[in-house]
Amino acid sequence: MPSSSVESLPRGFIPVMLTPFQETGAVDYPALAQLVDFYLEIGATGLFANCLSSEMYELTEDERLEITRFVVEQTAGRVPVVATGTFGGPIARQAEFVKRIYETGIQAVIVITSLIADEDESDAVFLERMHELIDRTDDIPLGFYECPVPYKRLISADILNDLLPTGRLIYHKDTCLDDAEVARRIAAGADYRFGLYDAYMVNAVSSLRAGAAGLSCIQGNEFPELIVWLCDNFNNTARQSDIDRVQQFFVDCMDLVHSAYPTIAKYTLQKRGLPISLYTRREVGPLTAELQREMDALIETANELQASLGIEPVLVEKLVE
Image (cartoon, rainbow, N blue to C red; front, side, top):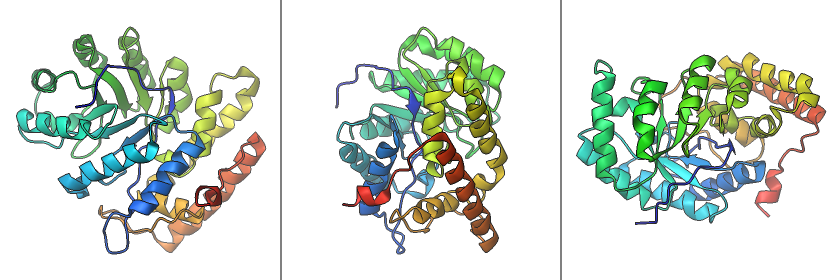
């Protein structure tokens, strides 16, 4: 098993990765290699593989391991990788898969909060099982993802106060949508190697200013340059009007970018020239002609915004030379 000194993840943009598929439905590893390089060229400081955007529930157990191992190998140590390692069932069984996916070389294993306790079970039950999972997984660094599937289970500051003293939690993908609660969670983790990465772009600036380590949002699969720019400039008072414009862009497009996701994100990257098909295993709404027209217009708006900010777009051709 890899050494597991519990270190903080880098601050900045940690994208929730897509999984490219061939039209046959098989994983497209050459396209995945280019996608990894694209994220890193954009300026990602880490990668979250085998997540909901990756269609993790539609992958086999072997595919989850193979994809994660491939991503780690493709990054070649350039950035840390985290990946989901809990998929329900008895804690003992979940702990075994945590160990297996950690052996792929990732920095931390992400726990899906809604697969530790059922929706009608209390926080006390959740905490009991989390302590069992921690006890059964050696010193492996862990993180949380408040995934909306099968249901969204939020991790309050009180829960963090209980678990952070174990020294095992280093990442939290936050989906509470509440900037005041985000601030409380950040405060709870202030004395630990713990980073909160907000997924809710409406609160991106407020979360970053409250001390969030970065952003892990689906919009990073559609407009990653703007995510990186915001992570780099959120506290630049000389560019407050630009910050406001970028924040408002993400507020305005919230509904569209979630429509037919992740297919619409694959469409956006395909428009940039990445060799990624629109094949999606996950059952989502259709990518209609109207949605494509709306996304085309949004891409043009984003390009104009980026140009006004002086952002040079990453050229896909550079990745395939």
